Amino acid sequence: MADDVSSADATEVANYVILSDIRELLEKESLREIGHQAVWSVSSCKQGYGVNSLRDNSLETYWQSDGTQPHMVNVQFKQKTTIHSVGVYTDYKADESYTPSRLSVSVGNDFNDLSEVEQVEVNEPSGWVWIKLPNQVGDKPIRTFMAQISVLQNHQNGRDTHMRQIKVFASTKDTTSIDYMISGCRLPMFSSVEAAMFSTIR
Image (cartoon, rainbow, N blue to C red; front, side, top):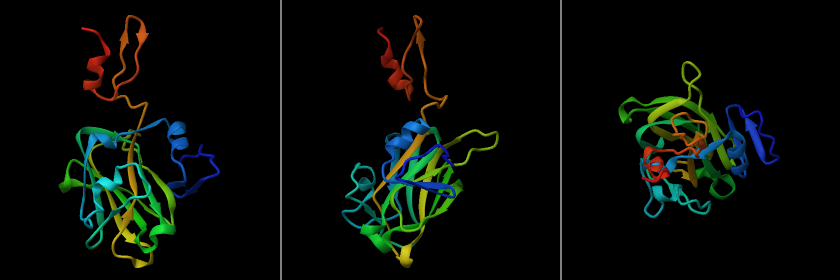
């Protein structure tokens, strides 16, 4: 996957890529982050190390689970949303046995009908684990109300887990975005009807 990724800081293994900096990949793959459109929750957390640490754009903070495996991060969208890939930042050098070694991504309408679409095994990752999700029947990208990222196993059989950041990506070429042509001028693509409403003067 991602055969055009040539960064010296990228390591490609099976169905995922590990990168020290994900920004170059996003530009090459024409991706945008859509996690802000969702409601996030976790299966458990140690006090002070909750779900907000996954979305604070800091690689120094982390979510720490506090329970039995699997440990789950739930991403719920208000409307059916196209998802291209998921990025998880882990740091084996700092977190050791708290670092995930086996991750899965499931999608569905809600908690009751989730189906696993991808599972990866990683070896001592320090960086962004970028997981590209498979297309559905007809080579169409996945569209879902919910995604769940699960830690199925940690390194050294560790019980609880650390994840420092999670990003959810969609293609900038997604046809569900709104593209307007007004007076022969092409306006930028908007990701929502609400944003597009402010593109014209009434």
